[in-house]
Image 1 (tube, helix red, strand yellow):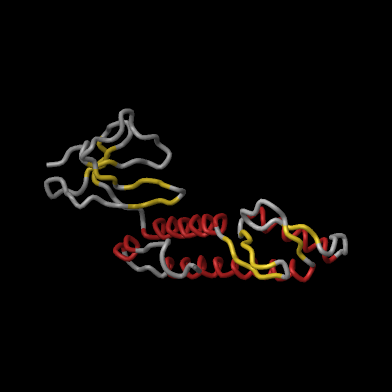
Image 2 (cartoon, rainbow, N blue to C red; image 1 turned 90 degrees about the vertical axis):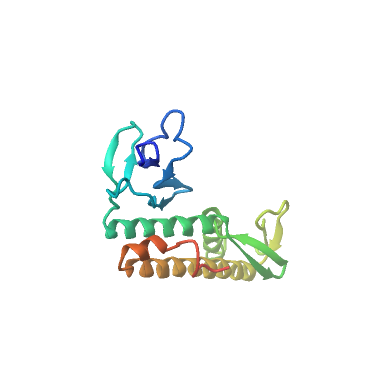
Length: 193
């Protein structure tokens, strides 16, 4: 028979109980890296469902998963979180007149390329101009044409990631039962390499 110390259930806003969970606790739900991972323990309590453990140490009754629509909404949020992490860490290698260099997909690089493009359009950006590729220690010299090539490559890579997110979202919303929701992995498939 299981008791409140065998199953751990942490509400996302609650801290871990002082002293942590018991070593034999099975985590039902936890939050890591902005992603919510839902798990249900396979053990039942005298055939009467699963017991949950709350940070206050109170037994709160048999665990009932949220409605499928809420779980699917959480999966969509997880897909967006995965998209955001991939964009912030992502890069694309672009060949210009200055050679082949990596350029970030992160928001700082996107903001910078937008401002430089505005400068090119208004003829206020020198041609050529200095640009520092991702993780480079020194700038390189790129032309206005190079800036267009860099912007196109960053835009295409960003769009490929957006399309992957939208494909995940469509697939998630089509999930029809608990087993499909439990099995869905937002970190696999669809994402560009």
